[in-house]
Length: 439
Ligand code: UDX
Image (cartoon, rainbow, N blue to C red):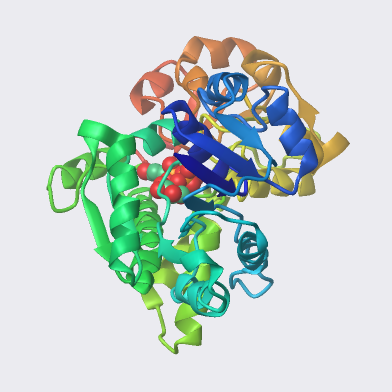
């Protein structure tokens, strides 16, 4: 069976290689010729575990074709980007362009256009009404099919999804799409929800908004805990997470959420709420809590050091989360910009995001080749992303490398007692003062 995928970004490329690896013949399209060339050279255009192997295999065995016309694709996935507009709304121009291109492409089969890009409620129906229903178009039907993959886990999430949401108003097309997933997932087919276009589109926003709210909630509680003697948000999160109605996932307090989805999708949902005249108070609080969360790291560093002027400060972790080189809306950007503004000599290290970082700061910061070079001689170290290779850094490492052993654990990876007992001035998100602190 032939499948086409329009837009080979983080969602589209992963979707394309996963289908191709399962034996489908996939035609991937992207207007970015550099990206296409990179994939043709079997290179992964971004850091994602296993992606390079999947590209290598599927391009070599000609399961994945790049920018090659094909008129026999039964399923056509739209996976282009939906960036934010200046007012936080959603820019649908890439989706519309892709739809117009698909409409014009020759086809010898009945096509099902699958909108995977994250779009506000009503978008897929609008595409169906204005583009695909306009002309006979070989009877093309539209389905909405939001994507829930996480960066750093994208291949696994695509191959083993935890649910499949299909929105639409054509029962036969929705059944066919469900059939494709049954074939793709085999025995491990998860629950499938067939619903309206608008519900499917809203489920995507609701999922991301809920998860972002869960994190902002625990960060809010972390703020209260940090001002409460002998309190620790880790223990509090553990205690509430045992209630199955709450659950223990996404309760890691930290410097806040970033990435290409939560900030953009929350803004888009807020803009949509405004458009339909609903004052979404919880969503505003979720966003506002996150907007200030990063400041905690600077506040702790300042409390310990006073002035940053001409002092080396090391920042471990730049990507918005581990296992990716993506720095979109990463909290590290705000933290480092502030440190630079306060005249610190900032040294940074990230296992995957150094090239991205160089484009952001140029000569304003120093780029270390490993954690040791980064931390060496620094007066304070801020851990901003919890890569595994930072988790294993022992108290001894900081004590022997740093000019002053002041550590701000922005992701709660270290055991406070151990690091404090070893002689490190240790700060962490959601960690209250201990009884003898400051005496
Ligand atoms: C998210 C959704 O999880 C995914 O389903 C959707 O398809 C796209 O958006 P992603 O952006 O890849 O995925 O990252 P995710 O793992 O969800 O983390 C988002 C942010 O929240 C990161 O900055 C992460 O550090 C932060 N986070 C996550 C916390 O601060 N605490 C947590 O407990 C979990």
